Length: 316
Ligand code: CP
Picture (cartoon, rainbow, N blue to C red):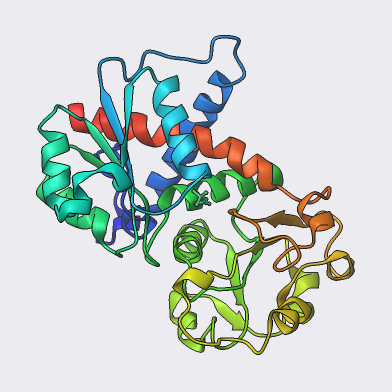
């Protein structure tokens, strides 16, 4: 029996590590739970007592604006006590390992750890070694489950469905944890995914994920319901993967001229941070088809749902 064919009997996971391990029903359950939490953010009093008395720690070993702040705000909206671990000012600088750091923090009575780390598998590693809930906020090039969940939530909200939609994910797929997590979620929910970019960043091997691969962005644009533009992750690239930024922008950037090739109601997405003038023209990033800030708003509801469900499973 595959995870997808199991009958869904309610959320039982205390960790959120990857969309690869979630069934279609579990993904839909998170999205449905987030609908309720989105409503909370429209009230004049935006807090609920769901996690009162619980302690949530954010542990970010890589830079973040959106994920870290929305997890902190989500935990505060759920009335948790929130503490932020600062790597630069911590004893990891004196050689303490990730596991020892986590064990010491857990010994203070922390209930949930939200971890971003450059090593793929870091969250899995901690989840097997410590007792509290572990939420993966991005591990190397491997997974970014809550980004994919907020992307799915936004597509469903704007398009009314996910099944049968044509979705292009464009750019640096090879180094993108967002792309991997988005692909897993989109395919489980029945979308048709096309990966687009230069051969060095989108090798044919990605077809094994169940996607179409193309290097001709302009040709596939007219078919797309959703176009998700990704940042070129220069911090993870060690060799020249395209001749020049100018060439990349010409072939794989989305500017006003390229948008003219799209369906009028195309949904343009980007997980952020955006490099304006590279993957997206500023006019497109701020244009009527862009859902970039809506994605950020929805991220708060998805992270509230994730914290709520995982803590509930841990307490059961
Ligand atoms: N999308 C995303 O993960 O953004 P941050 O790196 O700012 O968290």
